[in-house]
Length: 360
Image (cartoon, rainbow, N blue to C red; front, side, top):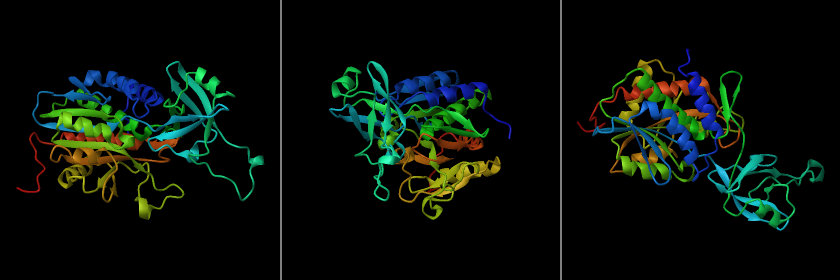
């Protein structure tokens, strides 16, 4: 298919993904996002914790949100030993299994300090009795031999730690990076705003292009900003698991694969009439899509919007992703573009004042 992404889109995506934005420290990344969408919106809303919202038609009474979250998983410095080794705790769902032999950036007031998650050499481990990586035994080495040496670098308990892995394209059309969960969502809703502006689409309602913080630790940014916006409708985009990879059972996790289109979720928090509108739009515009049953809750910001303000008609359009919460998260470019198209087309199918009520 002909790409809807521009050279400027790719430049923005690269800059946006490569910039660290750990949970609780999202503001520099948010500034990059706001700079990009500034020509495509009429106004901005920000809150005290860093959620950013670009608003189109801010004076309209009826409000539609399209939303993603901007934070990425990370670590905190939790303890510094007398030998200068650093123990960590999670900030979000950081995976201890992938940590050994990874480079890290430790963020201090003096700047970034480099370190590595060390691991004992294979020669020193007993066959059949090998320890597996655990939160209790992984440590960061910054090349120091004493605690005082580490502290002189500006490192202290509470410093946040991120991985430095940067954005790459694999085999022409696979986007690979840490933090695709879910800054790729922020990218996609920004592209929706761009397309609306460039195609001179006039919406009859207010559109709130929302990039929330702190999703990775419990949907907190969405909980806060929905009380500020008080939307009538929310369409959330996040990532979901590609279940075609080894060691994942599609009978338990659903049957979704990158390259086969956006994933539309079924869950109590998903308002059925709004979901039906999304499916009808996908079918009418010949946008491929997949389905996912999310059981009791979606685990995304959809839940925060749906159960706020007395109930908000909410739906979830997900992007299938391989290797979630690793530094090599992978998505298919065509899926990215089809999520953008599906949101772009769906919001044009929402009527001003529409209640999405089950009762006539």
